[in-house]
Length: 295
Image (cartoon, rainbow, N blue to C red; front, side, top):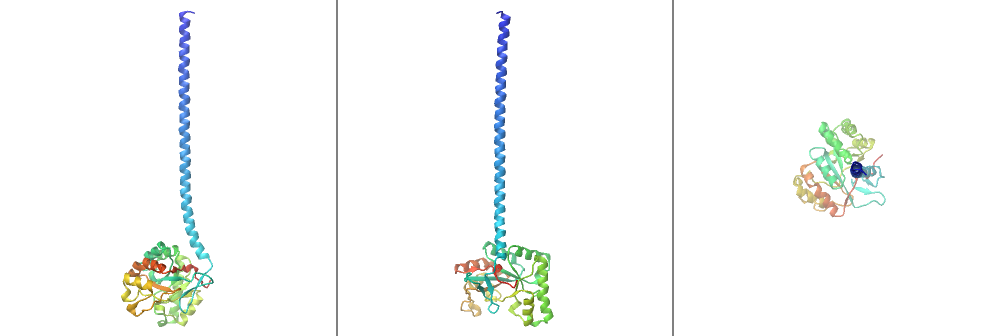
């Protein structure tokens, strides 16, 4: 073989080796790129699954909370109110060791904070509303918020008069006009009525009956007496049922007690401890959504 032919063979072999190396490098690069793309796809998929899982978890929690409130509202009544004594009584085999919490003169200054405290403590109460507190937008928004939190709204008359002291047509107006206004705001009429000062007339009783409401007074309450316009003193009195500074030396607390409270600064401060104290004595806080009404 001539030198020229040998040189051609060598060059041919060298070119083949370079081409082979380049092909291998391209294959390796392509494989690495494919692996990277696969990992990115898997990571994206895992991320989407986690996000979906988080969203599903949040939605499930919200659904459960909404379901619990809805089930309580739709559940058959297990309590009724004795209109003579204002006590709450079990129907059939419902728990007897319960007390009912009620808050009058709402929503004034502290109703929203009281509603939030009740919600934190997983306790319910009836908020009895006065019409003059829901004439402005702020009052209406607070009323709607309290209702949306699951608290029943009661009628406490429009302007808080002493009912027997006003004419019958005014008694009707005080009750019915407030029901109309509350319905305009929250979409439903109140199912409970409490007269200011606990003073009813034969006519107001008839109006309440015609409106399909449960007439309700209370078994005890002390936050409107001057000696108990103090959170610590009020807390002790409501938990014990005793108010020696106004002559109540024997406890008024018993199974079925209907506790009267008001939208007041000292009551707001005492509320959380009152709930805890009543539970420590073995009483559960009744859900007023489970009280029998006329409907």
